[in-house]
Image 1: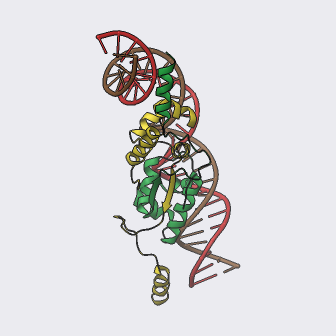
Image 2: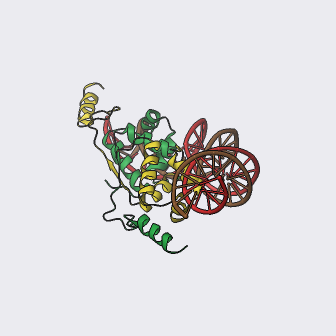
Image 3: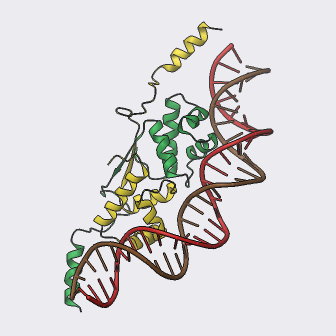
Length: 95
Length: 95
DNA sequence: CGGTAATGTAAGCGATCGCTGACATTTGGA
DNA sequence: TCCAAATGTCAGCGATCGCTTACATTACCG
């Protein structure tokens, strides 16, 4: 599943946990965090620590794939293909 | 790329930023964080805020896919297929 | 119905976040 | 070589983290 927000990630975590028949306490112990923390993360806590999130995903067997593909991004960045060449040319021409 | 650690994520972010010919200051402004923060994240800061990380990935056009596939996970969780059934049976037998 | 487990909420605490601002170091072009 | 931009480092500050403990609220099965 594509995860764009903390809430998405929380939903994935909760789904996976339930599918594995784990309760929050058990998962918390396995990961090494408090049950409180699990609750907050499953509710989409924005400011959770990255490292702990990664630990939970690992414990649940969830693979995180960072795909640098800008096909349908709403905030599509610039092309970046030969901007450097263009800039170099502009620099040559001006000064 | 599969990202298991904060350092992995940092590397992905740095690579993508450089490929887009952005410097840290520019990216920081676009995302709404300090340059300091960008530096630390690119160095693999474990305790960065999840929400900010997601904002950077979005700004760079990096898609995050959370795949609940436990094929080659080293911390492969339990099967969870019919544990409930087994437990239910055990409960019936004991009390 | 009970009663137990699972989940959610609250308050208080030390530790650490991310920010600002200035300075050091590295990198790259003229 | 020399300069400027980019990157990295440091210190101090308010805000917030995640933890613990205790209590409330749902689920759920007999």
